[in-house]
Each structure stands twice: as C-alpha cells, then as structure tokens.
Length: 127
Image 1 (cartoon, helix red, strand yellow):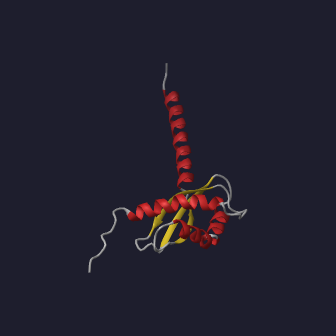
Image 2 (cartoon, rainbow, N blue to C red):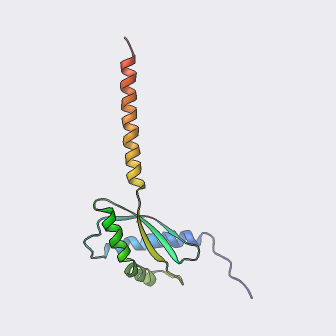
Image 3 (tube, rainbow, N blue to C red):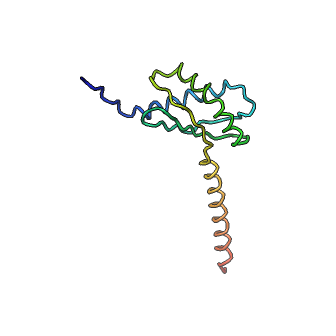
C-alpha cells in the first residue's frame, strides 16, 4: 500500500487560511459583546483536531470578547467547514493575545528610561 507523502508546511498553510476565513466570519457575528477583533495568529495541532486562535481588540473587554467568541466557536467552525477543503476542521479555542499590550508597556518603559537618562546626562554636565 502506498502512503501519501505529507505536504510541506501544510499545517502552517491551513492555520493561515483559518486565520483569513475567521476574520471574515467573525464580522458576520451579531453578538454585541464582540468588538473590533483582529485575529493575530492561529496554531493548529498536528492532527487538526484543535486550533488556538489568538486575537486582539481595538476597544472593548478582552474577557467578554473571549467568552463570546468561545460560545460562537461551533458556529464559526461550521462556517469554516463550508469554506475549507480539508477533511477535519479543528475545534476552535479563542485566547486574548496580550502581545500588543505588552509591547506598548515595554515601549512606554523604554521611553521613560530614555527620558530619565537624558535628564541625568544633562544634569551631570557643567558648561
């Protein structure tokens, strides 16, 4: 019996397609708890049974959005099933992505440190 050779980077391509399709499907949701969501990344397990979906928000409550998206996961999975050309559509698990939030905090800390350093440098000089 001949085995199919695995397609290189298939998992990454599937995750990328899920990310694009979910972005469109989420806009169709009528739940008022779901704000302006951006899908940042999708990680699919090797067996395609589960997908972690990382999202960020422009405004709104991260906790409420995460709950609403996880409640809508079945509906969204059904929408993916109609769009994707794969045998197994993964169960979706939404997680709020704090990367952008942390980056902004780090940027603020760096700016503050640089301002403090510049102040120290100017105080230490005598003309």
